[in-house]
Image (cartoon, rainbow, N blue to C red; front, side, top):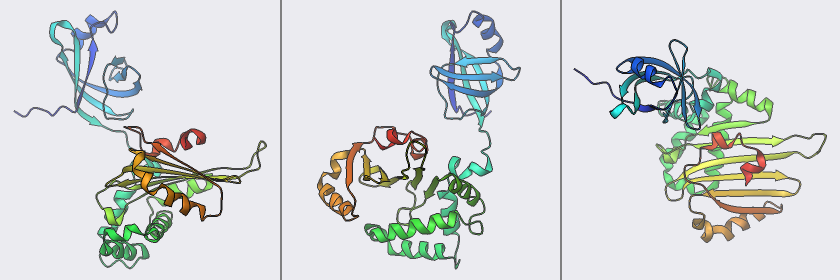
Length: 291
């Protein structure tokens, strides 16, 4: 007999509610179907098949809307009930939001790797960068050329029918989200880019542009970069797990930024442990995101 794998577990303590004893007697030993309704500060809110709501302690790696198959087991000495997750089905992501929710770097990389003799400009560029090896990543030209080519391809309906509508709609809103595989670092986390701006309003006629990037490095770890351009100049924020690692190249970095001909405000900040990826930061207020 095969024992089902446990994907996670929750607990309902005996003091959860006045009706808890009756609830425990009904649940113990049962296999339940439930929907994850919400993530609460103190646990999760579940909706059982009969519509009843149930609050449980603990956390699960599944988003709200997921359907769960749970096995209810009594805790020792009547302390409550443990809900073991035997199966979980996440809600389907809208096709339009797939590039944001599910990511677009992995599907694009798979297409490029399977391209063979594909004559498309991006496939040809990909093959040349792979052949050049990791040393090509030391030059800014390779990064710039690759980033522009990938973003152009992902927004092209003929080249990327599954992703282009998302990017074209974002462009109409003055924002942009892209996830780029790196040819010289296959298997690493992708580069992520978020673009936003402030348009003229009654309060201000100024146009402000911001770009945020996250890039994985083998020695530096996850590096985040934020650049804001306004009439006052450039605000540049660099987040690293260990900011001291930049000390040796800071003067060179400031000199390079100075060649742009604008006043530059550069700050190097610590990236907090467990910081969410750029998708979460992209929705933060601009001043908070820039630090």
